[in-house]
Image (cartoon, rainbow, N blue to C red):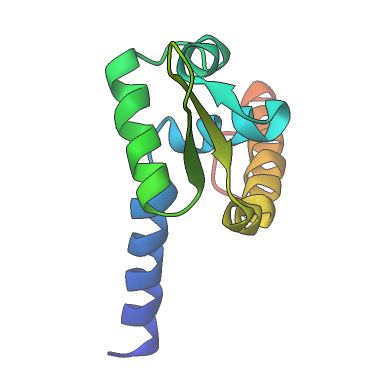
Amino acid sequence: MNECERGIAALEDALYAIGGKWKLRIVSALKDSGARRFNELQRTVKGISPRVLSNELKELEMNGFVKRIVHAQSPVLVEYELTPYSDTLKDVLVALIQWGANHRVRVREGAHSAV
């Protein structure tokens, strides 16, 4: 496997773990608010359906970014919180936020042609 192929494979792995419309929004919501119950998280992440949130949380948990905590009480209380591993996404989030802000300005200014 050459360097280009390794780069593409690494990009595919990253997109599998954090790609899509919702995963980074969920991580960001948990980072801002700490541990959250499912319904609290759904209210925070505007527009996400319960089914999609459930699937995304399972994938984030499977990839080690989110931990599901079950409190043994009646009724059972389930919370989701970020793991220390989720801190590895900090630079990715900062870069995406900076790029998104720059892109928004560019689009608003009508600079659609290639740079």
